Image 1 (cartoon, rainbow, N blue to C red):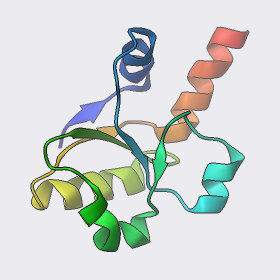
Image 2 (image 1 turned 90 degrees about the vertical axis):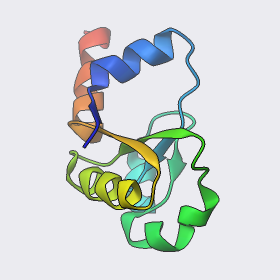
Image 3 (image 1 turned 45 degrees about the horizontal axis):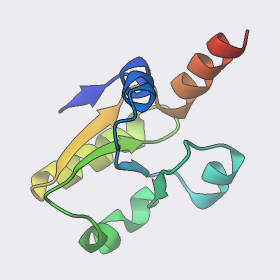
Length: 102
């Protein structure tokens, strides 16, 4: 499974790279905090909404800690999508943001 760290994602954003990111958490979780521009497709709906995705694009998959996004990454890879799991998820994202603030 392809993986990317939060630090690598932050660097890509800082370099103005266009990232296609999917958050597989539930909507309530996303409302509590998310990465700007991310698309929310809850893990339980991914099978039914994967027709919204483009197999010619690369996607970074995100969740709270990396578990659900790992499942989503494996599932989408089986269907031929170019996907990468963001390790540590939003917990690691928040840690990284807090480092920059403090």
